[in-house]
Image (tube, rainbow, N blue to C red; front, side, top):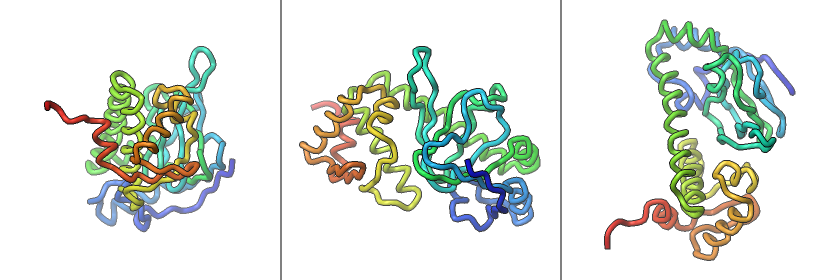
Length: 239
């Protein structure tokens, strides 16, 4: 793993609207810049942290894509989430001071390291930062709830449609296309996350292609009918 300590200036980072609070004054921004003083590069397939590692920092994804996963009792890998540029990884470690999952880079990636004790100290000083840290945590909880809902009550088509919509919406917030995406994860990983067998994932992708909702070329996906996907997730009520 290639760990590099380079001075990172949050104040000049084009991701700060996504990963850090707006509304900090220049003095506060300087203090924050001093806390987030290192970047780390992670090669594709390497772990940013693993289950059981001591929790010391949160990580803001500066470039690249990650998956978080846990090992089940029978030794299988269960994907618990996918994180992209501008999102924060590592919150799982706050509870017990140890990480409770593995974070693996799905492509070469770079993260900004935020030592948690310093972030906590600063957030007591600036309510804006404290509010933002709470918001990030809350977002994770909400995301967990929506995944539980997805797995608890949805059919295969609904799960995959909701997954694609969520992914493209998050990418769009980062300035990417509203209808085209490159899947950084494999079909197996999507299946693991959505609680679907690999063949079900492939079959569902093919069904969407046959219905003219999406076009797929290997990992490239073009959503041709966003409304069609939305209707799969929330069918119209009453006739």
